[in-house]
Length: 111
Image (cartoon, rainbow, N blue to C red; front, side):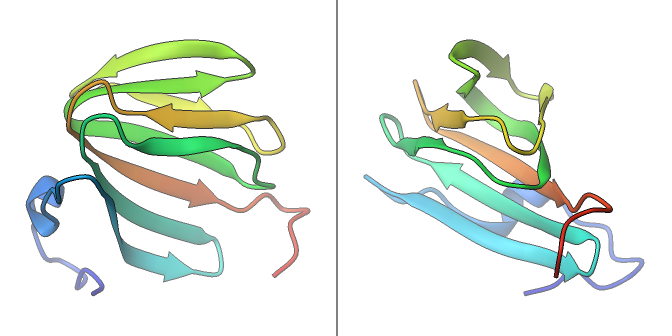
């Protein structure tokens, strides 16, 4: 599902939590990047990885542990962190939380 231009939405309402799971839903994708919503159940996460793109994470609901270069940041609702491309990062859920992930392609990125 994409968001229609001019539509006003509450991002956290566009997906629900699922027990024991990480739920994702891409809502915008174009040549410059994408916007994806995530809902993490408590104890779930994404293991350490890297991406060539810059990523902006914003917590919509709950609390998240975001690790960047082995340093863990504890984010609450309304807080954001920029994860620069090429640097290792991971996501953990000390409690249920929802977030947006905005992926921004760098000028040197291909495709």
